[in-house]
Image (cartoon, rainbow, N blue to C red; front, side, top):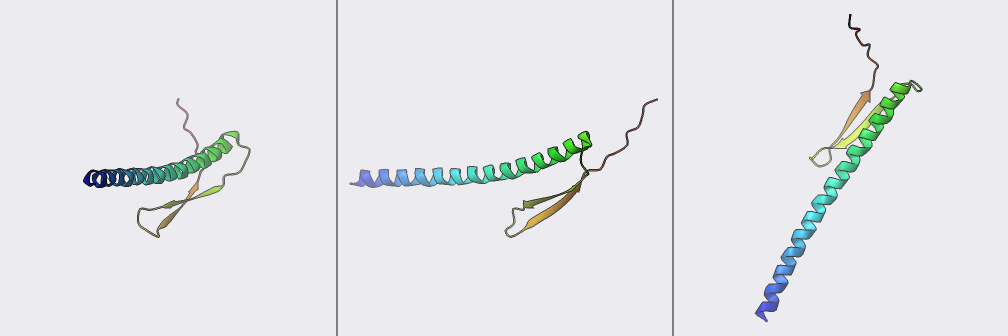
Length: 87
């Protein structure tokens, strides 16, 4: 009977550890998804700059901070810059 109890405790501990790791992986996947979305938006804007086919929009990027109930808004405007010619 004691052996069954020990095995149950081992299985419970292993389950708790696996659940914790899955939760961490889930959080990391969500963060990577947000980062991917921001990069895709920047690429689309830069492509528009290179193509010259659309005006320069302002991109608003929301990100969550590690502190609860805090979101940060970042406004980004891509502006063309003149390049210097080498003589």
